[in-house]
Image 1 (cartoon, helix red, strand yellow):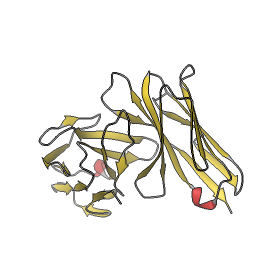
Image 2: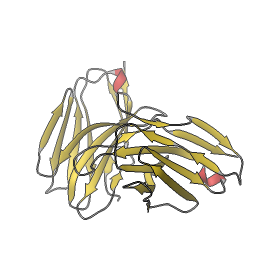
Image 3: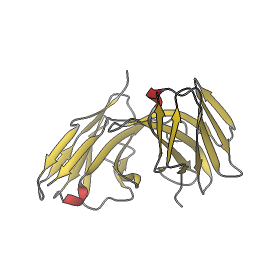
Image 4: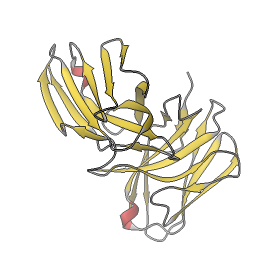
Length: 113
Length: 111
């Protein structure tokens, strides 16, 4: 069963901490994405990557960075966590967005206190 | 309104009834997708319909697409309590670089 795995389901971090959210996919997909989901706002794209070592900003990249050193792994980094980054974070991968749907991980619910 | 906007925001029906959710969008698209999300979990892809298609079926799901009206509908027939979830449409726009997700419809199926 192909899948996208996010390393943590729940995280609680303190303001100012550096936070790493890890995502691994086993489908050999080139395309990987990080979204955050907040009530009433739907899914908002933070960063995406179409290839190893490649990254592109999405709609809300401020306060975040990403790393893609290997094809299967796409990490989201909160450089200095703030309370307004409390959210559900969803990683997804896709073979070809014009012809295929996205496979999502189970999500990481991050609380910054 | 946003690209990929679902209607209604919430829907409550009895088990066995049909559920219909609608999605409207603004720009030309390559495809439109529907996803389900159970509470606190990731999204699960249900159906992708291309811009040159008008209808697709998958089990109890039926999706229609009207590109002239820039709208789509998702019909779930003979609903079950297990269908209780949020449903999202997502559009992949021509000339765009990303897929845009709507805010979702919350469906509650009462046993």
